[in-house]
Structure formats: C-alpha cells, structure tokens
Length: 304
Image (cartoon, rainbow, N blue to C red; front, side, top):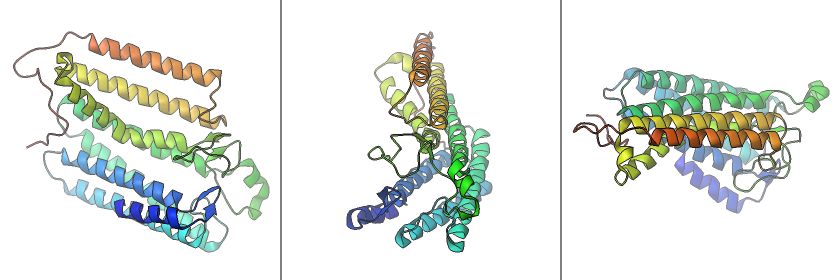
C-alpha cells in the first residue's frame, strides 16, 4: 500500500483528469495511505500478543487479501476513468462495485475476529491494553458507518432503473461539489466520509495518545501511575466516541463540517467540557507509589 501511494501520487502530478469534482488519482492515493496505516496498526497490535495464534495469522492474511482486492478495483477504475464506488452504469461497473462491497464485509468481519482475539489477551499494562481495545471498537463502528453511504438518494430513487449511480457520500447536496483541501470533504452539505474517517482512525489516535502520556511520564510523576494513565485513556476514548456521534449527527442533517449550527456547537462544547472534567479528575487521583508500579510500562515494549 505504501508503494501504491507513491504510484498514485505520481498519477496526481502527471494525470490532469478529474472525476466527480476531484483529481482522478486522489481516491486511490487516499485509500492506499489509509490501508497502509490500517495494516501497520493491526500488525503492531497483533505483535503485543505473548503467544502466536494460527487463527490470528490467517485472519490477518484475510484482511490483507480483502484490502488488496478492493485497492486493485479502485486503482483499475481510476485508470479507466470510471467511478469505483456506487457505480452501476454498466454490468462490469456493477460487478466491480459488488465485489468491493463483499471485500469490505470480509475486512470488517476479519477485524472483528482480530478484536475478539486481542480482547482476550493481555497486551501490556492496563492502559495499553485498553487503548488497543477502545481503538478497535471505534474502528469497527467507523467501518460500519460507511454503510450509510450505500443507500440511494431521493434523486436516485426517482430515476429508478435509469439511475447509473446508487449511493453517495454527500447529504443534501450532490457529490462533487466544493470541497475542503487535502480531505476533499464537502463544504456545502453533509459528508458521511467524516464519521467514517473519525471512527477508523481512532484505531491509531488512542494508542498514539497513550504514547504521548508515556513520553510525558518521565517529567510528570503523576503520569507514572497506571491508574491515572488508564483513566486518561478512558477519557480519550469517551471523547472520540462523543466526537464520532456528533460528526455523524451533523453529516446526517446535511450540515458541512466547517459550518456548524448552534446545536452542533453546543454538542461539541459539551464534549470538550466533559473531556476537560474527566482529565482533571484523572490527574487529581492520588498516585500509587510502590517499588513495582511507579513507572509506566511503555506501549512500545513487546511482551517476552
């Protein structure tokens, strides 16, 4: 996937074709980067297990194969100048989109199996173990939220059998309108790719948050307490969950991320206040100082 990201980046520079309002190689580039991060994160999480597992190994291979098949279709359709997602214009397009749907279902099921295996294992200290578990749960939810994009829009239902596209990532406006730089998210209506992104990348965000805590623990004694770190991880997971709920609600109401209304701002404010309160409560915990638990077990340390 990292190699494919380089190839598609070259395509972004050398191919000036545009599809649905975006450079034609933008989607393959984004997806290859996302899959590279997804694979690296799952590999790191699986390396935390103390004992090897044949089930985990073969499930990981299945996740890799399903991702590779989806990326092969996305890249092929880009090269052909065709949409990969929602496209039912020709029998070939419809077949390829159906296969993509199957691969995503397999990838989700594989991730669920890996999550169950990781929930049953001790992956380090309590903070590290729960950072991995919370990240996996939110990633599974984020993947499921992608299904919201598969339903037909009112215009597509009205077109009936004449529709060439079924599904959309925009809500309230057509796909391909004005978009944010880098992300390509819609700036005039709701965009269901945002909650999909937030949920999936909580897989990296929560463990990275713990890395930050452990880096600061060398300077701040309170962060060396396992209970404090665990509580902060729970606060971070709660913040990510609330943010995921807010951006999903915002997108479903046809509201652009950069144009929140008063209700959205109030929800974000409540999330920020609850996160701040939880953080303060965690840091006010009386630290436990014993010879055995006054330093953190780094998330980077692999079990023997």
